[in-house]
Amino acid sequence: MLAAWQRRQAPIRRFDIVLGTGVVLAAYVILDAGWRDALKAALVFMLGVFPLRHLLQGRSQRIAYGVWASLFALDIGIKSFLIEFYETKPDAVLIIEAIGNTTRAETVEFIRQYGPMLLQYALAAALVLGLLLLLAPDTPPSCARKPRWAVAILVLFLGLHANPTFSRANPAVFWPAQIPQYWEFAEQVESLADKRLIAEQKLSLWAPTYVGPDEHTVVVVVGKSTNRWNWQLYGYPRPTTPQLMHAARDALVFRDVISATSGTVASFRLMLTPAEIDKPLDDEAEPSVVLLAKAAGYKTFWISNQHDRFINPRYAEEADVVHLVNVGGRRGDRKLDEGLLPYYAAALRDPTPRKMIFVHLLGAHPHYELRYPDTFRYFSDGNDPVMTLMRQQNRSPWVRLQRNLYDNAMRYQDHVIARLLQDFKAQIGAGSGAFLFTADHAQEVGHTRDFAGHSLSEAGFTVPLLIWLSPPLPAAVSSALEHRPFQTDVLDWTLLELAHIRTAFDQPHLSLVSAHFVPQTRLIGGKPYAPSSRNRH
Image 1 (cartoon, one colour):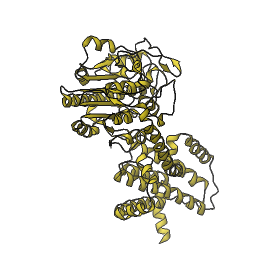
Image 2 (cartoon, one colour):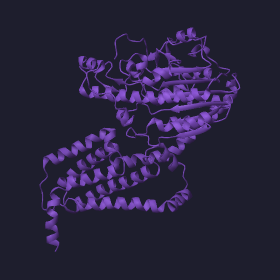
Image 3 (cartoon, helix red, strand yellow):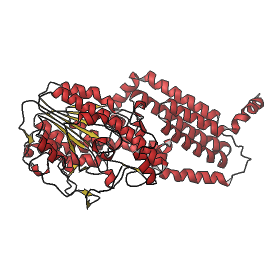
Image 4 (cartoon, one colour):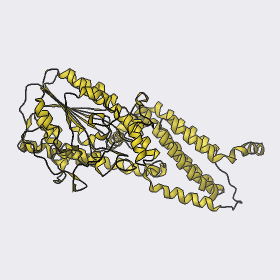
């Protein structure tokens, strides 16, 4: 009987690696990990099994394969539970914070409360493990054949771990790297909390005072990876901002603004604190705009679709009301920015006389195709002026594709930002308020070279900046303001000006809307910046 069963298994054994890889791929897809993560995990599994099958034999092979398969089964079970329960993954700050701040008693209570759900995913992991073990390779000890190509694959497998994306897909690397983060998080949070106390103690020195009307609302919207070179509002030949062309017709559209840095965290640390590019300080121990607004009598809101390990613990926790829509924190997360709108509408309706509302968008964070719904697939590789120019510039098909995806994301951002602005206008009416939009940084998408992504060149810094005011400024004044050269490392002074907040350390010459504004030397990569004159479209 055993011999007959083994004969029936023989055809399966010939394709054990392919079938096992298929099981892993299917399991990750079913748990909603996304195709990219699923394909990476399947690739790691397959490249790991090849050397096990051809370089090990007998008992050592069975043990090694059993451990390898168990790691993937556990990874699938844990991640599927977290995605279902928290809508996130184990390396998200939400999970790190929960584990870092959970006591043993709370852990027991959690297991008791969610035992049936935990059992469900444990059984799913066991099923995956059972299938993988059923497909285990079985090379008898007498087989001494160890092909060189198996050694080559082993070397390739190990070498690919130099790529962080690849290594993160390997449970044997990912989990050991995560465990110290859980342990360290409590210490990191405690450090942030200690520095926040220092910043709060400095508020008396700053003496923030509100000097505006009885009721006033300020909205600060920060986009992600948004290049004004791709906005129709700034002269781009594609219709990427049709709604803002109407909604922002009475707004200040600043024409010469660059971001503080080409990275998100670094930009936030400059935009919302007294730190400047050429004047570094311990920004965590200084009052942020959020703290200053609270001290001046504002009710503060932080509404975010971008889950960041620094920004949310640093700034969101300073706000009175916090809504974190995206708890995934990964590039593959498809959390559309429209998910912020209900929380934003509720904040606008809040009856508090003075409100400052921060909205952090996911914007055009790579991957671009995940940043808009299917209904916004508008641009393609046709013969419009943009694609014609890119072909003349010898941009590769991949970069041209990225430009189209990026422009689709811009068109969706136009929809979201216009909605935020229109809702603000409707709520404010003839009252007093200020709405500001800018981005943390920009993206190079084939503008100056055959590349798409973050850039330390001009294309990584050219961001839009819009301000809508009620009551509005005179038209002549607005026109003059729009051409002021500005870098967002000193945006905090503009925000305080818009909020009618005065402090003991005011810098009116750094406020973009101040009558005392003085242009500063702007820096990119430590060198003075002057706008280029070439056609970038």
